[in-house]
Length: 214
Image (tube, rainbow, N blue to C red; front, top):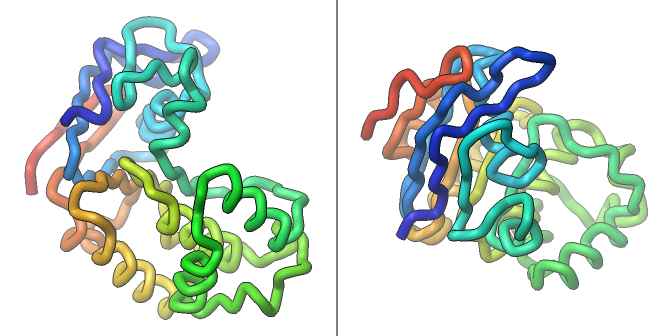
């Protein structure tokens, strides 16, 4: 089953090609390390999958859906953890109530997964999300993502704000996800996730310059 099909996609910002005529297919079970220097187009490619941008050329489909025209259908199937957590003003309790109802996510599983990464949500339940430390935000977002029944999990530098214990537990949690769930790790640290991926895609100057099974 093909999860993502991108054909000749191009995206420009101020006349600079950030994505340059990319062709890419991602199938069920792919565990991808998406690599490349800063500015290579990695995050832009992912955000195009999520419907954040109108493309200048080409087309992209996620599970057969158009990310712009059918964005709700796409977002039901994907979990995305950004490198910089959004400035959400909801309290932790309000946020958990929202994601639980909107995405049919088990709050108990979120609590349990967070605790495994050394985050006791109950101790911070009334705090606004934006007042948590960077590491605590990351742990909570990871716990929410792993608790959702997603076809594709996307992590943008997921361990950047995690302490050593949180990083270790994060990798243990990833080993427990369904074999049919695909993952994309935007990362500079292949050695950290090598046991969790089966494919490496390397981008530079908006192009896919390497795509290999590992």
